Every structure is written in structure tokens, then in C-alpha cells.
Length: 282
Length: 322
Image (cartoon, chains in turn yellow, brown):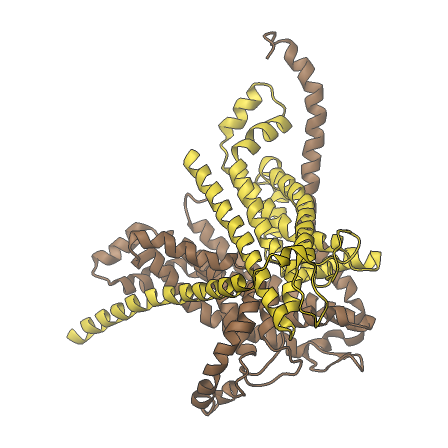
């Protein structure tokens, strides 16, 4: 009996040791990744990065201006496509589709799309945009990014609108407001924080995406803002620079990675702040 | 607002009806498009891989040749590479996630719960390109110092020894698995934490009342209650690991030949597509790479469906949660 008792106590002690240890392992890697990114990134950060374009191989110039601008253009265009479609799709699911069969089917397909490998989405953009036009283009990259955005925005919009009580809609409808007015002026406004959070999460997700851009937006050594041509972009430039044998290119990869991390972490923190503020209000 | 209420409906309605019609159908179209994306993606990549499917058939799946010069292609090394690197990732990430989730929900003092939870979630916000960069330039050199130890201690074991032999290069299948494990950790942890919280208090307290230890409550009450959802969460993480491209491409070593050792370089389906797509010179080469994408999509689809099915049963159990 004593044997059983001490064995049970021993198992409990071990588990209570292992659980915090697991948390420490997770935190250790988080700390390690962030620390090295900041240390290498800050050491390589120069004003020239924002002024000059990416240098040709073998030279010791410093610059990533074309990549920063290209990434902003790609993400901006993806937002122009992804936000309206995602917002309207989520609205339809919550306001019109409800629990009906078509809405449930779309939710199911959308949820699967949410976790589709991004490289497969890139292959799709290649098939529907790059092949018909015959060349790589910024537009195809934006289409791929938009397709990664739409499932996220659709799902959060749907979920957030579903949280709004029926009384608010009924009150507006009772005043004689048509359905579209009820949705745009009342429910969207009530769910604003939640919807915005979904959009920010989606933008954060696509800002770091590299795989779908490799064979859509491709890369461009020079500055370009043309949607119909290959465009430089931060993730692919980081990839190219990191894999290169040149020391100054690897340093620039770190600086680019640091800027990407800061941008994406800011969006993530911002989305959480907005969501928390909304929770306090309601 | 005009006080004459009787005038309002006649003015507002026709305008409202036309707008209502437009709004409803625009939104419906968007929803239809969102639902169609999956089907369209499948159709488009199936269409583009038709040439490779016609040439190689299903034999593509178990052929090991990958020779652009002779236009002979086979997916076997890449399918194995994808499955093995993901399996390593899941084997490492699942127990650690389990520990972290239990720590957050059962053990941690109140003021530690939120910070630890948020910090682990932060891992999910780090873009995969940064994982790749860190994996290649920081982790791989550090890991290459441990590899001789693995080789000398595990490399001579009968049977499994073959898995752990090789020169200390730092990059390879095992490194890819470790980096993937860190990447999927936050996703599995989040789901485990969310379902552990849903275990009814009276069940846990009854067990504690009978004199159970924290570990016994976790093992005998929480785990059985949440088993299907936890499995669903693991499959969700697996889906992510299978499709991850950049982090793997950086550290897997990109070798198109299969080797028995986990310490040797390999390649996964996403990594070979990422590396070779823009270099593919013949239509058959491109088509074969897209065929690989189709296979990857098929695998992740199956994994995702299993996850959805498992998580669904939990949602049905959870009362009062939307």
C-alpha cells in the first residue's frame, strides 16, 4: 500500500516538474528566435536600406527599398480584393445564410480553405493569372495573397456578426429600415471591433507569406510599381539573400526579417487590443 | 426625421427593396466565391497536372526518379520527406503542447496563466520566413554540434541506429522536424488549452474529492473527456506542418534522393516546388511539380477532414459555446 501511495505521489511530482518544463521549452525557443532576430536585425539596420534598391550580386551596396514598396503594393492590392469579398461573404453567411444548408456548406469549404497550404494557393494563382497572361506579375501575387485572406475575414466576420443579438436588428427593422441599412448601419457597426480584428489578423498572416509569391510575383532586382510585371517583395528577397553566399546579403536578410517581425507583431498586438477594448465595451 | 410617419414607407420601400436586392445578391455572390475557391483550386491544379498524370499515372506516387534531364519524375522521396518531417514535428510538439496546456489550465498561478498563454501564441505570429532564416543561420549551426553526440550514442543501436547516422551538417530531415515542431506548437497548445478549460468543474472536483492527484485528474479525467478534440487539434497542427514551405525549404537540405538517416538532407513536396518551380524548363517538369502540389493538397485535405470530424464531436459536447 505504501508502495502504491509513494508511486502515485512520485508520478504527480514528476508531472508537476514536466509541465512547467514544457512551458519553459516553448518560451525558450520564443526568446531565442526573437533575441537572435533583434540582435542580428538591429546590427544590420541602416538608413540606406530604405533609400536604395537591392544591389546586384557581388557588390557591397545596401538597400531594400524596392522590396518594401513591392510588399506594400502586394499586400495593399490583396486587401482591396480580399476585404470586400471576405466581409460580404461573412455577412451573407451570418445575415442571410444562417443555419441553412448552403451556408453550412460554404462555411465548411471556407474552413478547409483556411488551412490550405499556401504553396498550393500559389499554384492556383499561377494557373489562373500567370499562365493566361504568359508572364509573372504582381497582380498574380496579390490574387494569391487575397485568397489566403478571404477565408480568415469571412470566418471572423461570420462569427462576430453572429454574436450580435437579434434585438438590435429587430429594433432597426421596426423603425422601417431596409435589411441592407440594418446590416451596414447597425450590425456592422456593432461588430466593428471583431471584424477589424479579423482583417488585421488576415493582413498579419499574408504579410509574411513567401511560398505563394515565389512563382507569382517572383522578384525584381529593380524598383517597379507595375502590377503587370514581376515585383520585388520582402519575403522573397529575405529568402534569396539568406540563401546567398554574400555576407552583406545575409545581414540585409536579418534586417528585413526584423522589419517583417516588427510589422507583423504590431498588427497582432493591435488586433488583440482592439478585441479587448470591444469586450470591455459590451 | 419627418414627423409624418405615413409618408415614410411609400418613399423608403421601393428604394430599400432595390438596394436590398443588390446587397443580398452581391453578398451572396461573395459567399459563393468564398465557397468556390476550394473547388476551383482543386480543379485548376488537377487540370495543370493532367500532362504529368497522363504520362506517369499513379506510378508517380512510388517512383523515386527525379531527373529533369531525362524528363523522368517520381514523387516518392518527397512524399516520404513530407510525412517524415511532419511526423518528427508532431512527435516533438504534441507532448510539449500537452504539458504547456496543462500547465496553463491546471498548474500555473493565476498571474502566470495569461502571460504564458500569450507568449506561446506569439510563436504563431512569427512569419515562417523568419523561422527559416533562424533555422538556417542560427539553429542549424548549433544543432550540428549536437549531431555527433546523437550519432555516437544512437547511431549504433540495433535497428533504429540507421536513422541517426550521418555527418554533422546541421541541416536535414531532423532539423526540419524540430523547426516545424516549434511552428505548430502554438496551434496545438491553443486548442488543447481551449478544450481543457471546457472540462466541467464538477468532474475534476469529484476526482480531487476522491483524493486524486493533479496528474491523475489530468490523466484520468481531462484526457478522456477531451480525447477526440485533442486528436482533432493534433491533426490540425499536422495539416499545418505538412503544407509548411519556407521554414522547411531553408533547413531540410534539398536533396532529391532518399536516405535512411534522419540526419541526412532530404526534401518535402513544398520545398521541391519552392526550389524548382521557376527553373522548370519543360511542360512535363512544370506539370509534375503541380502534380506534386495536387498530392500535397490531397494529403492535407484528408488530414483536415479528420480534424474537422474530431473537433465537431467536441463542439457538440460543449454546452453554451457557439
